Length: 253
Image (cartoon, rainbow, N blue to C red; front, side, top):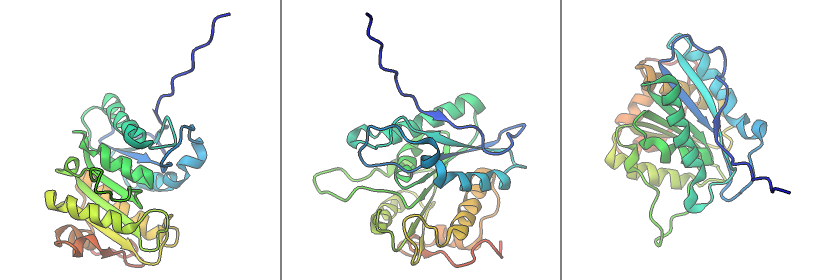
C-alpha cells in the first residue's frame, strides 16, 4: 500500500477585514504573536484575536483611502531559532500582497513575536512602515549577532511597549530602537506606563496611536503632534515617549 505524503504547510492571508475596497491603494498585514520554539500549527481564532480588533479599526479609518487589511496565518507557531519561520511567512505575505494588489505601500503590524517578524521582514521594497507592539526580542548575547536594523532604513517605524511587560523586556525594544534610530531618523517608540504585555489597560490609546501612525505612513495624513515630536526628537527622548492617557480623543493636528 502506497504511503501518503505528509501535507506541506503553507502560510496564507486571511480574508479582507471588513468590506473589500473597490480600489486598493494601501495594505496592512497583521502579524499575530507566536512562541519562541514550536512545531505546532497555530490555532486560527486564538492566534489572531490580538490583532483582529486593531485591523477592523484600521479598516474603518482607511476605507475612503482604499485600505485593505489582512491577518497573516503562519505555517508554524514557533520562530524556531535560525529558521525564523514567522519572519519568512511575513515576507511571503508581502510578496502575496504585491501579487494581488500590485505596487501599493504595505504596513506590517505585529504583536509579540509577530512584532519581531514585522521588523525582520521590513526590508521588502513594498514595505513603507512597521508597527511593533510589545515585540518579543531575544536576550542580548555577545556570542550572537544583534537583531538586524539595516532593513528598517527608509521605513517609518513605530514601537510601543508597556513598562510593566513581564513577557517581553521593554528595555530590549528600547535598545533596538536606539540602534535603528542611528541609521533611520523615522523611528519612534512610545512607552505605556504601568501597562503589561497585552497593553489591555490602555488599549484604546494604543489603537488610536497605531491608527494615526498608519494613516500617516500609508496615505500621507497629518500625524498627531506627539507622533511628530517623537519622530523628530533625538534619542532617548523620542524613544521613551510616554503615551498620554486619552490619546486620540482630542488630537491637535
